[in-house]
Length: 228
Image (tube, rainbow, N blue to C red):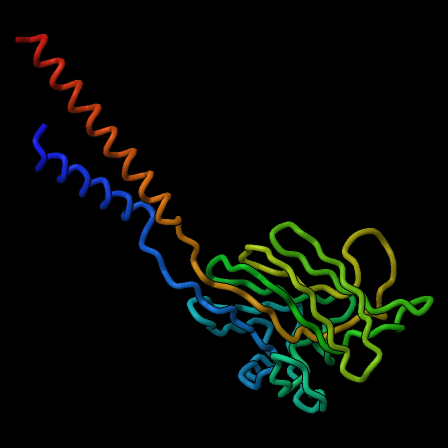
């Protein structure tokens, strides 16, 4: 068989593989969406507000006018948060019972963690902590405040690929009165890196295409021989 034909088929298979899977990209560092940063002050009084982080636009949509209380900024440091304010709340101050903030991403991201302030222990019946429900990609996380200081810092590590997150005070399931629960949304840690197939996957795909080309060529030769 003509070696030049083989080289041409191989090059075509490789180009097709690249076109299907795309080139590889460097893995980006996680991005902290810091709602305590002064850049979110513009969300004050709005029900919807957007900012861009990396390649992703982040949009907040609230059930009421959002707040960014610079006067309530914690006076003690918290890792990875600017603390120019105490985060995003609704109405009088925080996300309270029957209030909700939805966060939308313009492209799928991996949520690696989320952070609250003003989320305390001992606020509920029998000394229970304040409660929050976080929903993303059909998964619900129920969080309980455990802080006893004046900051109410809380964090949870997760790993969920999603385009939206909902933050609610109290519990969404069942009945009950959770008016004792409220918190400020302080941050979300995301990874917006696009995953690509490993080189081995691309090689296998190219080899498979090449095999199909060889098979087609052999069938054509056999049909020609029978006609002769």
